[in-house]
Structure formats: structure tokens, C-alpha cells
Image 1: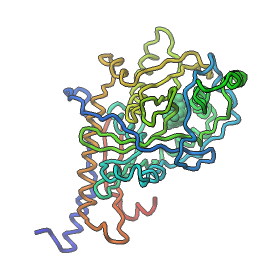
Image 2: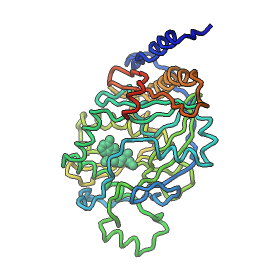
Image 3: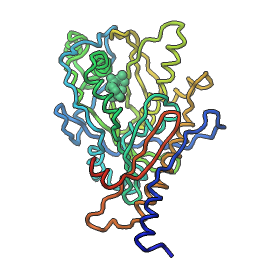
Image 4: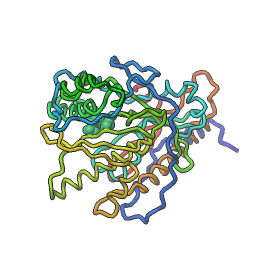
Length: 381
Ligand code: A3P
Ligand code: MG
Ligand code: MG
């Protein structure tokens, strides 16, 4: 018999809400084969307008175009329309999820989240600097993961906003995107349009970081059905409505000749580039190398699937299969704790029922800690 009196019930609830831990895999743990990862399939795309309005069209889709040599990434820094810092809510993705194109997949999904969150989870076995926190909910057996900005993270966001050096470095990345993209496919541009672009130093517009184009894909990590959305910088040549022509743009500091520290630092960064692109099915990453002052010095295109082999066997290198196995472990851990608890309450039909919110915390080199928030904490959100 289930314990039915109130006291027993409370004891049981208290036991469940004590934090549970998932330690990171040992660095020298024996290798496990990589779980299968299904090629991401696009269900829907949407755009954010210059005023940061979400619209279900491709108005923010951009095409790749080569940037001019030695482009100046500081160009028009003072004209930057900077997006307000947002709290990383799921709102945009949820609006996409109730559209006809996504709805049937939403119902079947085990996990729904932004691509950036999955990148953080999968990359955490090799993360030794940044901690992060998520809110986790389960509705009808589907996990929803959303960023919870910790105090440390909020302080860091304010720094990016106010510290002139950080702000300029952030601009370099966006300015590179503007140099490398065009609203029209380059092959359909007239001679005059190309000339005009060249006159303007290789780019026609202002940097407005409100504008973003997003793709919502379904995929499967082992047997876990994942629905995720993420920003795509541009497409190469043509848009096929699938990720096969997507391009991710990145800037990175010059690698000084013969400087092993520079090489190591870059190869470590490649893991983030890799996971971010791989999870959305982006097959190509174009990296613009720059000087500390923001002059573009070299351009290199990488095939996403080839990146793991580039670093394999090197000292301190990352192993993509460790990340994928860890990703499966984390999602199953959340399913075990959060979904079973939410579904066991079996109150979904009650009018005011809201799913309990759980907090997942990651500490570098340690691992994860999960606990259920008290109702009062949720209302503080
Ligand atoms: P770089 O990645 O070239 O540095 P994304 O590459 O994900 O499309 O992001 C575009 C740019 O946004 C980045 O360019 C960087 O300038 C800025 N950016 C992204 N994530 C950031 C973060 N966590 N903090 C500060 N800037 C960030
Ligand atoms: Mg981007
Ligand atoms: Mg980018």
C-alpha cells in the first residue's frame, strides 16, 4: 500500500527534494563507444526583426559572402544597435513549438531546449571555468530546460555591457558576421550591388544584434528525442530548408607561429565550436582570425564532422564521445528525477496545476547537483 496519510506524504516529498548529484566522468575512465546521434531535421525557422519582434518568416536569413581581406572589425562600433541582455527564457522556442509544423514532434519529444543549453551540458566534462544553472520542468513526460542566470552570470553580463574592452571584443564577433553575410545570395547580386558593397568596406549595413535567424530541429541522441532551436549565422549559396548549407561564423585570436599555447587554446575552443554546430546539424564553420586590435588576418573553413579527428590523441585533447555519453547520462538522470516526480503527482488535469521546477547546478570539475525548488522560490522567479 502507498503511504496515504499527510505526514508520510510530507516525509516522502522532503526526501525527494534533497539534492541528488551526478559526478563528472573520471578523465581517465575507459572509453565508451559514442551513442548514435541522428542527423538534425529542420521543422521550422523564424526570425527576430530589427526591433526584436519574433516573426515566423525568413526575413533574417543571410547568405555567406567572403569578407574583404584585412577587414577592420572595429568599423562602425559606435553605430552598434546592441540587443538588450535577455534572461534566456524559452519563450521564443515555445511559440515555435505550438505551430502546426512542430506540434506533433513536441508531443513526442523527450527534451525541449535551446541549442546553447545542450552545448553547455555536453561540453561540461571539459569545462574548467564557467559554472551554470538551469531550470528544469517536466510536462507530460517532456523535459523543458531553460537557463537560470546565477548571480555570477548576471555580474558577468553586466561586465560585458560596461567594460569597454569586453564590449569591443564582443563587437568583433558581430562585425565579422556582418562582413561575411549578405541579404541576397552573392551569385544573384548585380555588379552594382557588389561594387556598392566593396565601396562600403565590404558591408552595407549597421550591426543590429536584435536581428537573428533561428532554426528549430528534431534529432535523437541515442534513444532520446530532442527538439532544439538555435541561431544560424548564414547559409552557403542556397537555402534548402534543411541544415545542409548552414554556416557558423566565429572569430578567434591569431595563432602565433610556433606558439604551442596559442594552438592549445584554439583546439580547446574548437570543442565549443564543434558542439554548437553539430547539435543543429551545421556542417561548416568559418573562422576569422584577428589581431588583438581587431584586424582580420586570415580565414579558415572547417568541416564540423572533421574537428574531433583534428584534436584526437593530442595532449589535453577533448573526445566528442565523452561529451555525447555524458549528455545521455545527464538527460536520463533528469528524466529519472524530474519526470517521474512530476508525473507521479498525476494532477495535470487540475486547473491550477503547475509543474514543479527543479534547479540543476553545474560546478566545473565537479559535476551536477539537482534539487526541487520550494514553491516560494519558484514564485520569486
Ligand atoms: P565570436 O563567436 O566570433 O566571438 P555566435 O558565434 O554564437 O554566433 O555568437 C556571435 C557573437 O556573439 C560572438 O562572436 C561574440 O562576439 C558574441 N557572443 C556570443 N556568446 C557570447 C558570450 N557568452 N559572451 C559575450 N559575447 C558573446
Ligand atoms: Mg551567431
Ligand atoms: Mg557565430
